[in-house]
Amino acid sequence: MGCRDVFVPIHSEYDLTRIDAIERLFDEHRPEILIHLAAVVGASARIGPNPGRFFYDNAIMGIQLIDAARRHGIEKTLSLGSICAYPKFTPVPFLEEELWNGIRRDERPLRMAKKMLLVHARLIGSIME
Image (spheres, rainbow, N blue to C red):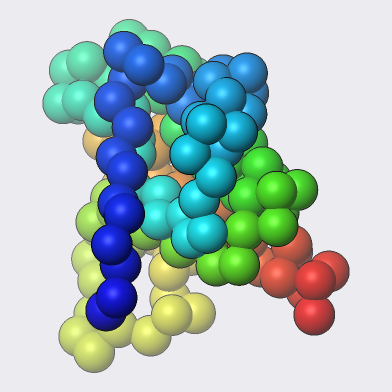
């Protein structure tokens, strides 16, 4: 598709839950397009004792990345969701408006964080249009 320079940050160099790391990333690499695939993930046993931390880390990472992209004039931002964002019992064919139906009790923190990014992106998009 014509991409010649693709940069994938690693956590030890850029902790994307920290705004200073995100700003440094954007200043050092000056991206034209942002594809946000990062997430703090773990098995249900790992999430169980720390659901608030999982929600916070994933939500703040995405919110700050999307907002930094807006402030830095990034021409296009793509933030991917996760299978855990889908309802536990997903009908086929799946309609976008059904994304908010049901809850997957085992993965609520990541699910809700990913869905909050969808809301955030839509709000920024409506402001920019």
